[in-house]
Amino acid sequence: MADRRLQVFHTVARLLSFTKAAESLHMTQPAVTFQVRQLEEYFNTRLFDRTHNRISLTDAGQRVYEFADRIFDLYGEMENAVREMTGDVSGIVMIGASTTIAEYMLPVLLGDFRQKYPDVNVHLKVSNTEGIVSMVENNVIDLGVVEAPVLNKNLVVDVCRMDQLVAIVPKNHPLANQKKVKIAELLKHPYICREEGSGTREVIAEYLSTCGINVNEVSICMELGSPEAVKGAVEAGMGVSIVSRATINKELQLGTLVALTLDPNLERPFSFVHQKQKFRHRATDELLEFAQTYCSEHP
Image (cartoon, one colour):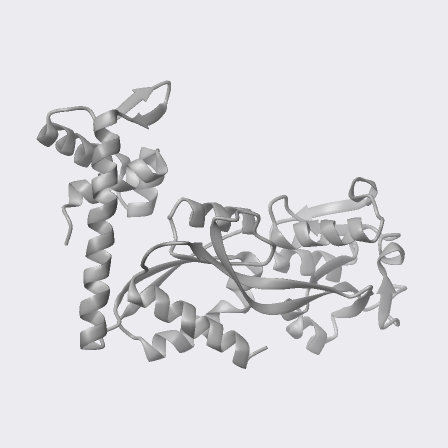
């Protein structure tokens, strides 16, 4: 409902980037630039200073941004109030999830949510934990689901469920007949890990540190960007790894991998993360509540 020029300006001002704003709004960058210029012509003043490929708000731009913030807060409150009266839950929800969660937890959850709320369109972005937290911080997404601790104290973090991480080895590996393995014993073998920024890698690094193991001294033979790639490399006998137990059900049934409980045990939280906002669209609130209930009923 709000003036499109003001919506585009508000997004650029929030992200301080025409490129990121274009991605967030699903527009081309020239279209974003055109909308901002139209608003500048309307006010007959510059709203952004553009220097050395960086932008910043002018004094006038800062005032417009503050008013736009209030305007969109009111629009959101109005929409929520009317939809609460009519019982209507609709709209678009932008959700982001780290790779493990997006591939193994969210498909069923979002499918069940879609059945209950067919008029809500959920757009899913997949990245590693670091990328998802950045998207929440920059308001690119409404809700993130991550697999590692979130350090930004300005964000709201709600634990969804605990996830057990286990060692995996090929079926013919020397450790394959064990049920438990000490981490020091596991790391005597070539180790396959996830990429930098991965929540799984971050949690494992912290675990190694608490076990008195220097992460920099671990013999890493491969770094891979997804759970599927890691599992494939272990199945091929290239090394051992540590993954979420939720990701290996198929391989355990087929007998292509063996899972070993780590000693000491390793768990991590899957968590919802979002901004501390005065309001959220009702569809976002419904999705968050639905997901929390789902996680409690499917531990």
